[in-house]
Structure formats: structure tokens, C-alpha cells
Image (cartoon, rainbow, N blue to C red):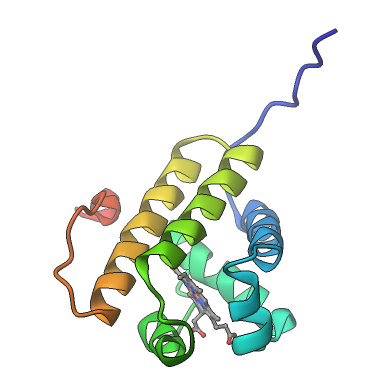
Length: 144
Ligand code: HEM
């Protein structure tokens, strides 16, 4: 007999952001390509990194301003060790989308996927000094 899956809801606040970020980084750490970047190269302190990433996505979605940092500089540091090529960003985005779709659906979930895609394009292009193309225009939602 076919089992009904529980209905997925949208990301509405900090609670869902924390659930998403936890599952996403679990997938990232288990990934053959990306896991070693975090655990062996950057030797990430997960107790600090996870709340920082929750602040980041909360600031994107709810404009809380709780994230203060410079993602571009952080990723630039990784270039000499791991290259930060397009394939890595594509894998990062694939895991981001899979995790989101597994747990959430709705306007905010879709918005965060578009912001992630735009940011991946921007960070990748800036690091490699390429022109920025193909943006989903996710930021325009907040323009007045
Ligand atoms: C190739 C794909 C990526 C890799 C391998 C990667 C890896 C990393 C690593 C190793 C750190 C440092 C963690 C630490 O030392 O505490 C970091 C930080 C961070 N990443 Fe990524 N990242 C990727 C893509 C992205 C994308 C596309 C975004 C945004 C949508 C993003 C957002 C951030 C943020 C906000 C931080 C925290 C920066 C800070 O310390 O203020 N990353 N990332």
C-alpha cells in the first residue's frame, strides 16, 4: 500500500532555518567532494559555523541583520587549497536544492534556493574574475 508522506511546509522562521541548515551541512559533510573541504582543509568548528550560517540565512530571509561577515573573503582563502571551481559550486547547489525539497516547500523555500544559486554564481565569478551572468534575480523581491 502506498504510504502518504507528511506534508512539507514552508520555511517561516528561525526554527525551520535551523532544521534546514543542520540537514544541509550533514549532507555536505557526507559528500565525497565537499566534505573534506570543511573537515580536513578548513577544519571547521561546527559549533560556531552552524549558528553563523543560521544567522546568514535568517538575515537573507527575514532581514534580521544577525549575520555580519564577509563570505567572499572566507571563500577566497580556500582557493589556493581546493580551487573553488564551478563543479564544487554545482555540487553545493545540488545538495542545497535536494535538502530543501526533501523537507520544505513554499515561497520562502523557493526564494532561498534562488538566493543560493545567485550567491553561488556571484561568489564563483568574483573569485575567478569572471563576468556575473545568469542570475535568478532573487534580490529583487526586496526592492521597493
Ligand atoms: C564551492 C562551494 C562552497 C564551499 C566548498 C564552501 C566552503 C566554506 C567553508 C570551508 C567555510 C568556512 C567555515 C569556517 O571556517 O568556519 C565557508 C563559510 C561560509 N560559506 Fe561557504 N562554501 C561554498 C559555497 C557557499 C555559497 C554558495 C554560499 C552562499 C550562498 C556560502 C556561504 C557561506 C557563509 C555565509 C560562510 C560564513 C562566512 C563567515 O565566516 O562569515 N558558501 N564556506
